[in-house]
Image 1 (cartoon, rainbow, N blue to C red):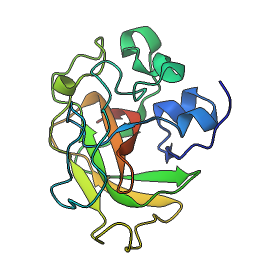
Image 2 (tube, rainbow, N blue to C red):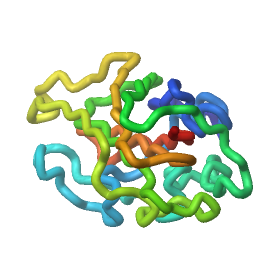
Image 3 (spheres, rainbow, N blue to C red):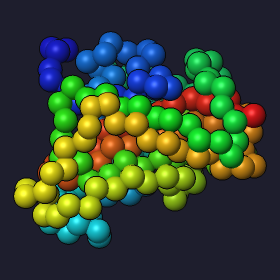
Length: 192
């Protein structure tokens, strides 16, 4: 595959993509926005002038954003034994995004796997709480006249919920205002 201009990745704590793909690949995990939506053509309820979404990744291909070059990211932990960052329940975790090509940004959403999820199975929507544990939203509208370009790097402080322990996956989704896409990054955590 030819190296194309890519867009952004989570570098701290290192995402699964950042650890296991070339940098240009890790920054190119792009699919339709509005996770956990499964259909395309949806309008943003907060910013209806933003571009409607493209097709989001299907279940089992969330970590790769449906990209064939990143398919190994979709393998369950039982096959890969993913590197797990040690973190604490109820404490803030700083998430750092770096960009290769910044886009006008509507929001970042952070989803965590449910208690009792199955790490031996591929990641599906049913494995995650469907409400984000944190959302960072840019309010400027319409997108073509607002300053929605993110700072590089962008750092968010995400508080992990109490009551979760052991291995969990944090799904970080960067939603773009002026395209139908988002960038998908998963971070493997060991919560104490």
